[in-house]
Image 1: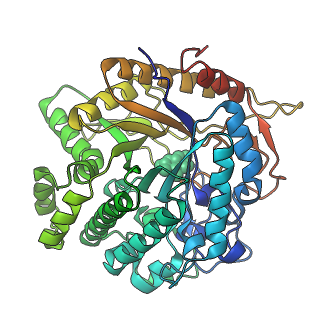
Image 2: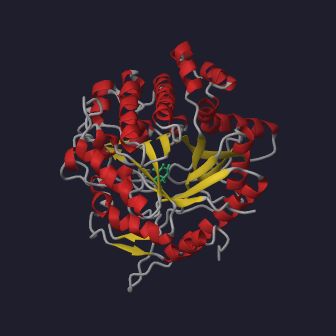
Image 3: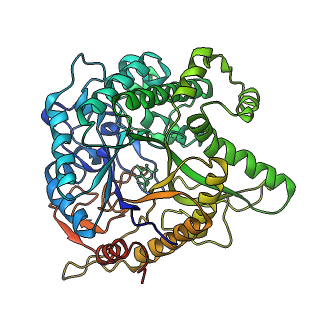
Length: 488
Ligand code: BG6
């Protein structure tokens, strides 16, 4: 019992949050390159004119582009058997619609994957983790335009063909369901909520003020489903051994009280936030409750064509992967206390503590979630591809970082994953979010640190990008070496 010997242990990053080198070797501008930083109380702003006086954290990020050898060596030292990263679409097709791919971009990822192989680390590659070429937004309006489906599939198949002998594990879209949660972050996914005025704006637009058009968002999401399904099918034709997964931002919902109305509300929210996208990608069809949701929200579902339905059925995923950071409470009680923080949603759970960013800490919720997912999708292997603790770290005079709070967080979550495996859940891997400090997606901060590895880089743009090991580094190394047995 416990974690199997071939369990995949590692960490996860995204190109736009770690690579930097935002225009190097032919890379084109992408959506995250247009975002400035914020903090827990201040939303990130979007400033597309590339103001040279503004600080765009993704432009240099943690400079993984020039440090990848050093970073992968550190991951290998911890004993990683898997490393999740994304390919930056804008490095391969700088404008998204170029005739031929950019060889320098392809060569960069060849080197990264070779470096992983050197240490026996399996790459787990996300094809789109917000890195939508900016030209796709300005010229096509993002994924609400069906032409973008073909552009994505061309990009994905280019990667599949090039790396078919180097990469086995793939994910199509990171957190494809986030547009269902109303964060106003749909445009990170090129869902096309930005109008012409936003795209050409010369002033800062807070992300949460981008106008959301529900019909367009749902159509764009549908186009992503179709693009994902076509990609899965094409991938299996290129290499039948590929394991291609979806990726869901799992935001498990609890009723605040046993009131039947709260129970029903929790079920409804759970379906829309979490299961809606999983149902389409795992079962290959829209669930019945989706049609009621469309009706109640004035959405005309005629964008779901008969041909699309066939595509969705033929392109179901091989594994279900998800991020897990927190759980949320809901209630029909309008006086219930809300939880503060950025992107934390719902009501305060009186039984749980939260991080400095308001994200509730709920390890037992991970066991509950894994069991729920397995019950729902009994034939699909599961992988937790993000889980981690964003915190302010204190660097001591001798350079050490005593991050016992991070160790506690991981210990409790790993313990609950072990319980879930013993419950019979087919969990095949675990990649912690941010094994190395990187730029926060939600706030754009460096100060929200997740890593086992500290990076000397700060929100005022200072720091020399040097890396050092925090206390949690040795702890995670021990966990991996003992197959998850030694959690002390
Ligand atoms: C997930 C994203 O939602 O959460 C990551 O896939 C992100 O890109 C992570 O970094 C943690 O969120 P944040 O806002 O703390 O960076």
